[in-house]
Amino acid sequence: MRIYISDEAADWFKEEMQLDDGEAVRFFVKYGGSSPVQQGFSLGVRKDVPDDPAAAVERHGHTFFVESADVWYFDDHDLYIGYDAKRDEPTYDYKKH
Image (cartoon, rainbow, N blue to C red; front, side, top):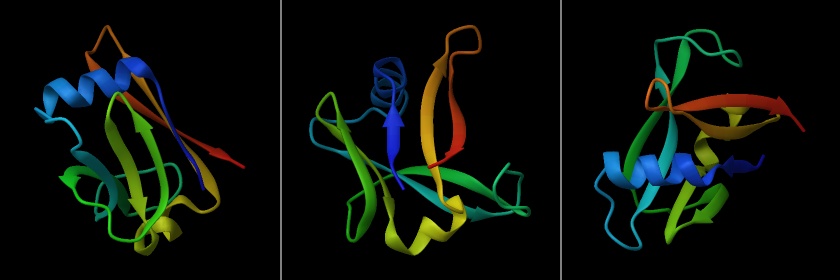
C-alpha cells in the first residue's frame, strides 16, 4: 500500500495536531464507525513514532504512516489524503492499486 497526502492536508495536520518539527502522524484501525473498505471499522489518527511502518510518506518535515499490523484494513487500497477547504478538514479516499 502507499500513502499520498496533499500539501494542504499536511499543513492542516501540522496546525490541528500542533506538530513539532519531525513529529509523525499514524493512521490506524479503530473498531466501530464506517469505512468504504472494512465494515465495522474506521480510520483513526494520532501522533506516534513509527515502529514497523508498512507505508510512509514525508511532507513538510513530518512523516505520515501506517504500521504493518494495520495494513489489512486497507484491503489492497492506497490511501489518498486531501483537504476540503469548505469544511476545513481532511478527506480520505481509498483506491485499489
